[in-house]
Length: 349
Image (tube, rainbow, N blue to C red):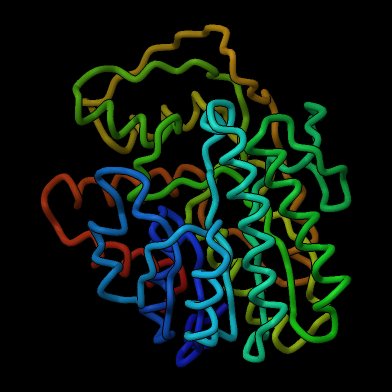
């Protein structure tokens, strides 16, 4: 994947104020793309969108993905050729407290962006970003493949399963042969600038700031942890390649190599190694009213063979980059510059 292929392209990004959306906008802006974002206000305080001054790099529309008329107006005015759909209610725990909002955003939000695409004369390529949690998780020791049953357990995961089905139906019914469409199911993403609640790496950072040890509730849970640049590079590569070859269209798992499927405790220990003596943790195993899978693995053979994408950084290297970013932020440095440095390092430019 070469970022230069996005130079001069018109790209619409939903969810651009979020953690992954901010990184994606930074990558596209550095590559010379013209970007328009559509999203609610940044979901946390502090947040990467404001820290990295993303609003100065893109055309920003602070709006609700559930508002179809406004979405269509902004979409039609911009006339994109590529769309990355990241707008979502992304927190599993919040899905339990706000299930209706979760389904409205994650399902009808997908319907709304696909309606804009269906009626567009400029559109060429669409990637819907979902999650590795779309699968019916049977706690298998092996990785799930793209043809496994979609039936996420909790409201968040299930709403993303529905988003996958909506996308497939729109493609079959309206878009096939006209607009290239794919969905991307990424594993657990970590990186500098993630301040979301109920996530292990942001909790580690909050622990460092507060001086209190982090409590690990599920130390043996395995997850496909990967640096944020890994799935974003895959999204960009899919969207680019399917412009030229409609045979690329489909659903893709995006995750680390099998040996990088590590436990929560291993991730925390890696953070401690790279951060230093100021970081402490304790194990506090307890029951939770929120369902959490103990084992979750992805089989990424399809994207490797069909797209030629391969992960570059180990889980330990990803954690090291998180520590580097946060040291820049906590010392008052330029986090946008640090993001560009990591992007250049990842792509080898």
